Amino acid sequence: MATRYQSPSLHFLRDTFKCFLPNPQVVALAIILTVSFVLIYSLSDLLMPAFVSIVLAYLLEGLVNKAENMNMPRLAAVYLVFSVFMGCLVFLLFYLIPLVSQQAIELVQNIPEILNRAQAGIMSLPDMYPEFISENKIQQMMFAVQRELLTYGQNILSYSAASVVGLVSVMIYLFLVPMMVFFFLKDKQLLIAWFLQFIPKDRNLTIRVWEEVDMQIGNYVRGKFGEVFILWAVSYATYAAMGLNYAMLLAVLMGLQVIIPYIGATLVTFPVLGVAYFQWGLNGEEFMYVVIAYSIIQALDGVVLVPVLFSEAVNLHAIAIIIAILFFGGLWGFWGVFLAIPLATVVKAVLTAWPRIDDNSTGISL
Image (cartoon, rainbow, N blue to C red; front, side, top):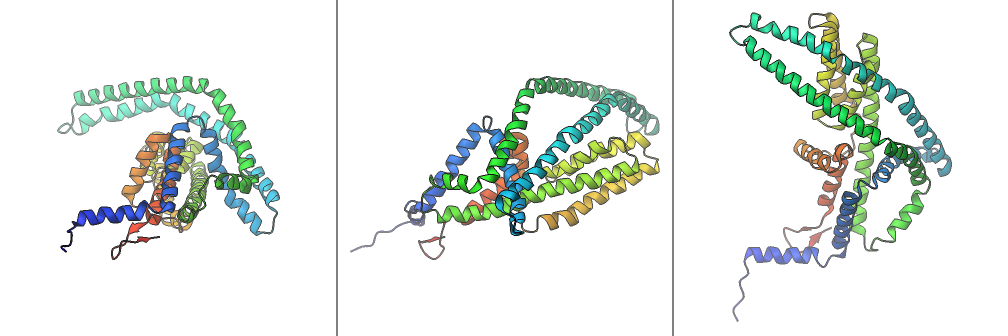
């Protein structure tokens, strides 16, 4: 009896179906991931306060666990950590944000003077380098810059008007988010038990993925908040001691720049060095001191802070990070950018734990 010939592609398809279809763990994981993504994507606008609360509770859970490791009861640890959280929130709302807003307004009000100084410096270039640039080209460049700044100004005014309309939403956030954070911390086990009743019992693969994701996201979120705080504090102390204008505003930008890897450090360079230039000019020693201090802070962030705070985090390729920022930022804006790397670690954890066709057999490697 002649044997039936099967091509390599047919073998691959057969092995693939054997790998995935009969495996209830794979099916359960795929359903959980699909349903979670659809719900988050479709309900992100409505449930954003809940998502924000989950992220904050996840951040504070590490502090609660540390307090529990010091033999403190769970409820007492929750009250202590939540009290510290509310104190930081009050400091943020009633001191930091008003101060940063005031400095930002002052900077915007000084933009015409900054532009005049910049125009005076640029208009001297044709006299210094007549063979490379002409006065006509300089005027065209200045007109283009003024037109762009006018457009940006109109956009800012439109955003301000929209922010007034959204003031009610902000008040809802300020009331709902802290309350949900408290209950997420206090009733963590109860909520997890309620959620698990909807998950299939055969969930070893899902648990394996969650354990890796839990470790990596926890390390990343807590490390990122620590990095933001340290950079903000060091930058403010440095710039304030040097007498740099808008020190608090620039320090906040220095802290927030780590949210967008690679890109944030480049973007924050312009306001820091720009303010120093228009305050002291290129010939002043203070300007060079600011350049040196800024370079040292950025170097310490890359050489010291990142290795220490993220020593246990998953290493992702730069291309993967950039793609994650573009994709998730396009879906969910600021929070998508902030959570781009954690979400990328979720994808990597799923791909790592996902069953694969064995090279030497038709089985699966779980």
